[in-house]
Image (cartoon, rainbow, N blue to C red; front, top):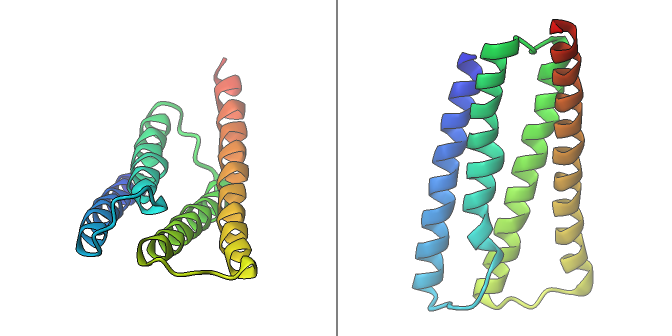
Length: 138
């Protein structure tokens, strides 16, 4: 449970850093249009901090963490951080007005997509694991 709390705290800090970076970077560059930098903050808060706080509560209630949980959470971390990094890269290029080749743009989108897939698969695996534990309690 301590690990879940520490992870939630880490993602809260990353969320705040992402929010401050978005605000200051766009202000410094005089950018007022929509950019993907704006969602880094919310991704880290919801998919990072809130997710791990929920895992903390679920662990306290059901003791669901097993040997496979660590491996699944590694994929979750990789997926979340890969997604966030690609959002930052896309957002910085938007703010700076950098023209990307279609291949580079597709690569950024593809990597963000892989991050989302890792998030989704690991989330489903964790829910299946939790479902098994809850059914055993009945």
